[in-house]
Image (tube, rainbow, N blue to C red):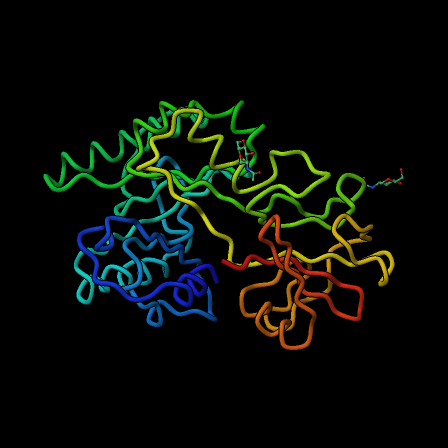
Amino acid sequence: MKLTLLVLALGAAVMIDGTTPDGYKRVCYYQKSNRVKVSTIPADLCTHIVFAFAVIQNWNIEPEVPQDLDLYKQLVDKKTSNPGLKVMVSLQIGSRQLLLGRLLRWKHSQKMPLTSCGIITWTESVIDAETLAEGQERLLFSLALIPSVRSAAVIYDVPVISSVVDFATAMTYDYHVFIKNISEVTAYNSPLFTPAGESAVYSTNATISFYLNAGMDRAKLLLGLATYGRSYTLVSASQHFLHAPASGVGGPGPVYGLKGFYSYQDSCTELKGGTRVWDDHSYHTCTRQSMGVVRGYTER
Ligand SMILES: *[C@@H]1O[C@H](CO)[C@@H](O)[C@H](O)[C@H]1NC(C)=O
Ligand SMILES: *[C@@H]1O[C@H](CO)[C@@H](O)[C@H](O)[C@H]1NC(C)=O
């Protein structure tokens, strides 16, 4: 899903060893899906492809299911058409949305406490051991950084992260989701700037500014874009403004059929029948249906 937008939004370019000709990284996440096959990924549009997700089991980095090994291989084979391409796996640690960088090989057993600090040290030791054992180019290490400025200020030592990673991607989405009794009004999923009436921390600008001010090397910081939106069911169909009362997440999207979530394909389908509303300040777009469902999505 995420990959699809990148493909649509960006032109083709020849890659030089992990960067575009103008020196940028264009990192694509591939989440296993029957809808988007590995074979359909145009590898020449990405400098890096990250496979989501592998798991840590018994202190080994393991494929989630054995069949994933074949998908890893198919991704690596894309280097024949794009020799500079880097292929990585992403590890999802627990429920804390701490995403860790990707390693291509996964046979190690070293014990470290599974805290975010421990996991970074452990991952680094895996990379070092792998590099020594194989006598080859050092594996890349990257982190996906959470969007919440308040949480990030508590859990991350940003200068340390900046010094150990090859790059880190700040996730700039899910600033608002429907949560019963806690967050029951419509709000933007991924605004560039904070709209009036909200705490200034809920925007792409706030997240990126935070990481730069906290000591992240700007050459290593990547902007993580969402290619999906979130939806709400309105309490009243006539009250469809920003921060309007919502009774729950929206009904199933037209293509993927998921409640509260709609993919890029769902958005495109929706736009044909809905009303497009653009927020000039936040750079955010919504569609509205007569059914009393609003969906926010990102247009960039
Ligand atoms: C929300 O609040 C109502 C009323 O106080 C309560 O009955 C309900 O259990 C709460 N729901 C959740 C999910 O916390
Ligand atoms: C972007 O974030 C910075 C840092 O928090 C803030 O000073 C600035 O006003 C923000 N810009 C907009 C347009 O909100």
